[in-house]
Image (cartoon, each protein chain N blue to C red):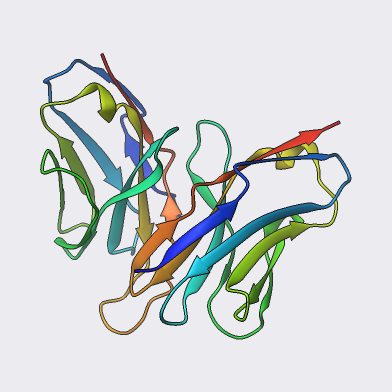
Amino acid sequence: KAGVTQTPRYLIKTRGQQVTLSCSPISGHRSVSWYQQTPGQGLQFLFEYFSETQRNKGNFPGRFSGRQFSNSRSEMNVSTLELGDSALYLCASSPTEAGGRSYNEQFFGPGTRLTVL
Amino acid sequence: AQSVTQLGSHVSVSEGALVLLRCNYSSSVPPYLFWYVQYPNQGLQLLLKYTTGATLVKGINGFEAEFKKSETSFHLTKPSAHMSDAAEYFCAVSVSNDMRFGAGTRLTVKP
């Protein structure tokens, strides 16, 4: 199976702009999670989508939003970019099922490196 | 909510020496535990996981970890370090689809 893909891999924006990042999960995976990784804060959970619904959400401002499509592909959007939003944004998919406990093993994409100038 | 603490943000070992990366977790219910590795400019790759059953878990690249409930630990070990093991390692705990990562440990391997 193809792995998790993220586009674009690198992005440069200026403060105040908005950005949309895309993630295609592994075929058959219905759960998609997003993380922000920075040297200072480490890996921080943004949100998780399952069957087009946001199931979990981290502690980020409303400028960070996401969505999931019927084919499980997901996008995240950051509006009014700030310098502190510069980070590696990682997407992960999981074969989580709707009912019962899941292993929640996550498969990560290579990330999108966002630089805000 | 569950949490993970990785002791030591940087660990340096000589090639051929034992690798020991420490991870302690906090969870009110039996957790699932994971170790991931991240190489520069790449995403995270699963090394191994503990769900239920045998507490000694073997993973890829010769790594293993032991789940010790009494110590709430899940330390990662490898008997003999290789140069290619140099990377950042993350311990993670998952409860009910909510995964939390530790701050990471950067492993340096000296020739």
